Length: 167
Image 1 (cartoon, rainbow, N blue to C red):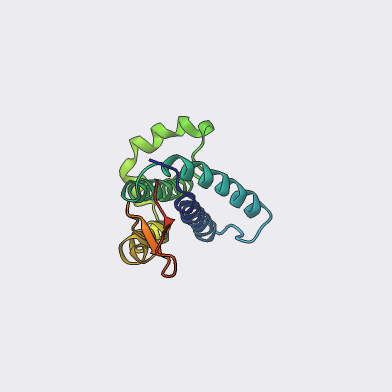
Image 2 (image 1 turned 45 degrees about the vertical axis):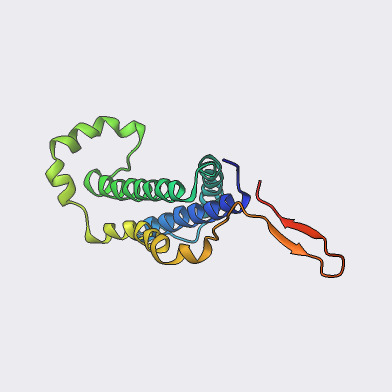
């Protein structure tokens, strides 16, 4: 399969928008300032992650791209959701330094999930919007390509010019 630049750019825009939307929702739900100087650093890192992921999946066909991006979207939303729940339950975010607290969460798993506030479920809205985009809107932007040659015939000379050929 060949790398298609327009597909890669489309994936970069989708992933960057998704990650930025998750970050904004995370900040809004956890009462952190949305417009801040750190948001530029977050958007820049999201751009780098988007380019890397898009480059890796651009070698696959569109259906596999959609599945991979949907799975990643769900995992990103789940991670943000668990971060808020962990912060609400223990007062700290998940990190390598808090791995010792994982035992407390596992011992009290029922209480851990009961501590989630209903507003935390808003973090799954980017995933739902992405699925809605793929189901209802993406088909209008995806142009099917074929292996056919488009041939124009010069009426005055009677010769054929190959104007497009997919390799």
